[in-house]
Image 1 (cartoon, rainbow, N blue to C red):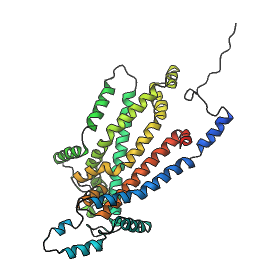
Image 2 (cartoon, one colour; image 1 turned 30 degrees about the vertical axis):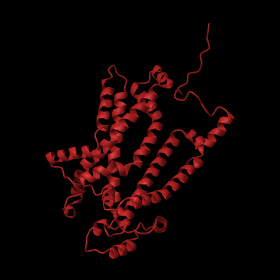
Image 3 (tube, rainbow, N blue to C red; image 1 turned 90 degrees about the horizontal axis):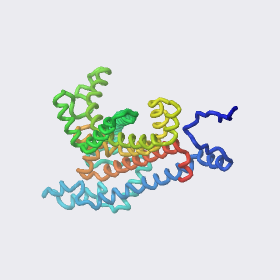
Image 4 (tube, rainbow, N blue to C red; image 1 turned 180 degrees about the vertical axis):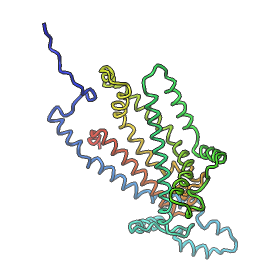
Length: 355
């Protein structure tokens, strides 16, 4: 007596093949074209980028005082002199004229002139942009590497749940600590360990050899990178653990385990690979918040980046510098959202149908 045995298949990751019918083939072809999906995002980004300077100039204009407020408190300075200075700097212009003036200059690559620093704003931002990019890139790399590693480690099947509980408790504790307090605690640790505090390099930087410069820069980077990464690490752990928990409950995971696939391979090759989609959106969000995330750390630790520049510009009412920095922050937000959308589309092209 014999029985018919169905052919064995190893494609348990995709229980449904959307290419099985001609209608599905047409839908797949539509999903494969990302142009409509990203055209809508880029159009929305362009509108937001044009509205941000208007809103920034409006709010700065409604705020009490201006760049010349301290000078106006001096009784030796006449109102006529103040009026001439406001006209010279363009402070007294109506909002439409300020915006059109900024837009015309920006179209020609001119970001304006800083009232406080008496320098072209492009030079100020260019000198500090690299510093902020270096700090945040290393901090994001550290936070995501540690967050994903810890999440994968605690997601391995085991009898006791205490590692998972410990990771969740640690993430909650780190998330409850403000970035300013974390920076102050690290400064106290620097005083005990002899690590440099403030600045990006030592005073004798120009006299150092290349290898010594790398060591000096690394020592100055250590504490700021840790402080910024501590702001991202708990959220990365929570998002990764949640995404893995949802994926590990899927039927194809149980099928893989029933076929004898090792727990580590199930976790990394199947669960984590399918959890990338939810994590992609948050990665884009972390990129979009680079300036705001590092601002308190840069101010407390004296890191010469865009965050410290923005803080000084707001305090001293440098309206044109504040406007340019607000536009940069908005562009980072839009770029981060676009990166998140691109990663989501890469993980699931069907999202293009809902664009």
